[in-house]
Length: 148
Image 1: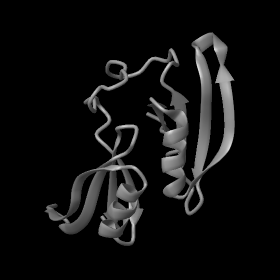
Image 2 (image 1 turned 45 degrees about the horizontal axis):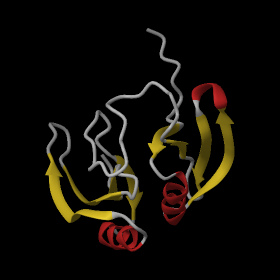
Image 3 (image 1 turned 180 degrees about the vertical axis):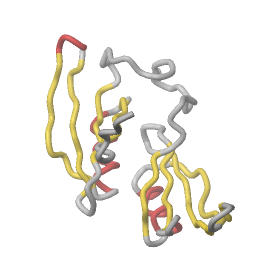
């Protein structure tokens, strides 16, 4: 099969509170680059955000959008909902510092800092990370730089 994939462009999330979610991702060094609406899909607001430090994009759409998605729709007051997306991972210099800053900006604690060994036949690596729930509910991993 001829593989024409050249890289990863963005991931997209539905946000229960779009403005709160945008504000949180701004604290992770993202900035809004585009915004739009699609009335035919009941989409009132969607934004594309780019990380200022590296070539990574995030799309945030309002919770009323009628787009195909995995899992059931989150309702106001629902606890975090499990679905196929396990987490979003960002490379950081200091996982504990990133964790604390995320909590200060509205995230909920999940795991302050862990160190674990990933075993391989070629080369095992030790990783250090922390995890939070964003204000919108997605799990965010902060991974200290490591060569896999």
